[in-house]
Length: 614
Image 1 (cartoon, rainbow, N blue to C red):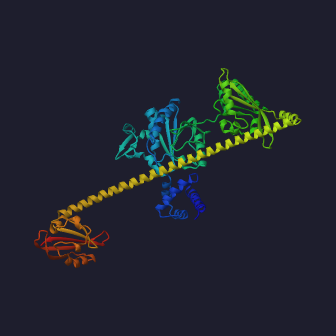
Image 2 (spheres, rainbow, N blue to C red):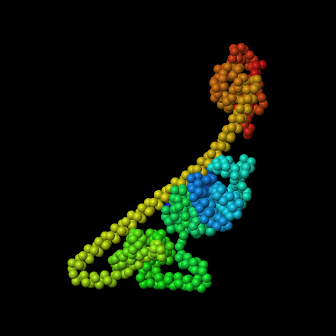
Image 3 (cartoon, rainbow, N blue to C red):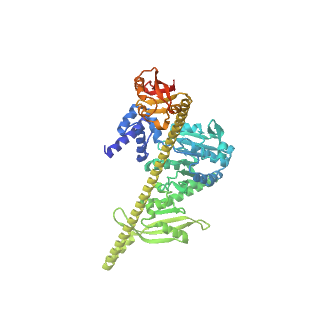
């Protein structure tokens, strides 16, 4: 099967999971998804996706095992200790003290797995607020798509090894011993609410102060990440904090979140500015008459600005587009949703004029700048000529609040000028050279823009590679934990086997008769100390050797018939007395008893020879 056919079958498998069990994996990265599904298929001895799809249809219980394999629940208390310390000391503390004392604090742990992250949040908040304030004000919402992991999280029960990242002081304060495990304090546990939630499909929890989603986004493709981040932006208050994993940098989502500390992947929400609401809320703080007048006044100013024939826009000191009248929106193809976005993200910031450097100069000099004769290529091929006026906007105290940018169309003036220049060939030639220079400049600008886009693409590819490596790292960590569990089981079984062997050896040693155990090939598998005393051969010398090849004082050939009879199924003991010579060279009468040796299914595995001097 070629790659395209295999991909098509894999997509059919994902579609079946969505239809049959309501779980949508289509937003997950295909590379990591295929690795996890292949791992589960290998455990069932299945090589092809279509065969595994048939298997799922026949054995519905396989769904749960497949989900457990795909959903990698790698987590721990205070994972990345340095990041948690920074969050507690610099972020959460400021967030809490900036709120009124009676206002609730809402936190969401998205992708909480078995609950360690949610209880870490509870510990951090309780340390800052104290137990009483924590119980009264805090709600920690912890969600995941894995019901089995959520069930474990709700029990809040952890082993000593799982609590190793928690200091002894915090462990004694927040966990109570229960047998050989520890449970989170019940009075604080009531503030932690667990529930199933699909980041791709379900509506987000709202009015949050802090949202923690660590190493979950890296499993989704770019489109699903964008949808989830938009929901996170909606879920957070202004201002709100987003805490991500070390592989997640949000390089292409600067319009939603801005880094507070990029090293520790802590971001703050970029608020969506709506000045009309700000003015109206200000007016509502006054009496009804003043409120009505101010609201009408603000609305009148907005309408007058919007209907102005001169294309104009207003940029605040943070570089965000605040106002753009209808003339400017039509001229440059802007839409209402562009208001509030960073100017640098819009084409108008560099075409037809590089505005950001001009605006910075206006801020620095507190003076208006007029850039004349700026050319702009229109869709119908005509060249439009503009004079661009950039003026600072200052309050009564002379503090710069932003800048006003107006575009005056002087194309008609240039047309008249061109008609005059047509009478002079030299001027016409000069004009052609000027147009050629403009074209070269525009080509250079486009090349620079293309280079910039290539660099952005390369950066996104590097980020995707980083996320993929982190995903594989978590998969390896999960596999390592599974191997550790298997290793512990093998160690326990080895210990039990050693104890059984020691017990068996003590029995053989304590017997006053020589005991020799043979397998079906007549090879020695056990030779006790009394046998060594009788025949002078040590256990290490005879292990694995055929009894009939041993040089000893017992005529072993005379035992051959008795041994064979035991091997073919005679269940009674067989006995013979032989003339022999012991290790000291003394002639003795040796009584040999032969018994068959059976396994648990009553199959003969060998014989046991018991020898003693008659």
